Length: 521
Image 1: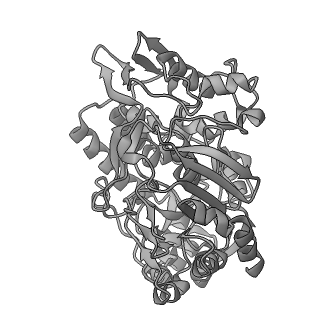
Image 2: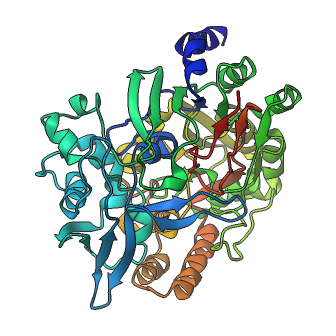
């Protein structure tokens, strides 16, 4: 830990801090997210790199702490489905936007940005970025420029949730990539998005430095600090030590047992509910979890109140895929802690003891406190008759498993990957429809029923929001009854920061806006 803090100190010299206002952030990630377009390492990659260097056609409104984040115009000022063809979306682009290299945002550049992520023959196609976007892009057919300020996005099937998906397609400068001879390794030395920060420099595996974009198109979101320094620090104790010693200003996911110490030292700790679940997503095809009795047993074995107590106010009990604050929560069945019932179900299913292998990470985006939490859940499962084996790995490896699906990893019975049910398409339908079986979506365990699949398809074709919301709520209730996940906890998104950090608003979202932050001397 001391070595890590010393490294941070060496990286962030006093002369740098005194010359300009600098916000130094310790991420939970083990490495710097990719900065050449679509980031890797899950939503933390989007939170700190993707959405700071780039914009989508549609952005998230992260200005409020008292309600779930909603959509707001980004590089598009207007979007609507073609009333004559529900596979066609008409997108009106914002005028006068320039990339960081000075090139213009045009309909042709927007069309190319989609093609480079869906068409293997397109100039600038990148297999890595294609893989990261596969779950979002699977229903995009093609994009056509229309005149001076519009594009038409064609989907393979009607999809009323398309605006949510568009938040994840990040626009990069075609000029800059062409100048790099279409080589992303060269482009990485001078990437150009349209976001509120511009790339300055990187030390691989150590830090990424961004500077504010004085010419950002959204004048309200020009950063109130000069420089943003992003540091990967996967160990919670290292992040805490770095904050206490003044080496960083802002840390993700402080360990619950360090919060009293942080607060007594004058640090500010913030939490807020947001769309998050911390579960075991199980293999629904192969034994033992293809038997609903085994899935029910596991859910009755978990003492969620004890898990929440372990988290000391930084997490809440998780009884369903969505948190109760979600507009789609409804009235799902509740799996109360009942160890006797859990044991009876295992014996009834003929799996006692019932051996399972769970893939987990040591840290990562939204993973909370995975080591301590998994050890507690293991003890609870084993108390009723399970035998739990952990396959422990870093976050990037686990995220790769989650993308490829259960078929590619037959020796793994469940994965502990936190999920982001921020919106219906990926956050709910993504886990319950056959068309979203990984690698085509986040449905790692290949869960579906004919009833849920039909209702999901109907929701995608329903453009009346109230009717569609009712369908998503029903899908959530039907899904929880089938227990395709072992429901455990919901994160309350803890962060800690120096008292010098002013202006931060903790949004009810996986994503956060750092631009309002000012650093007091």
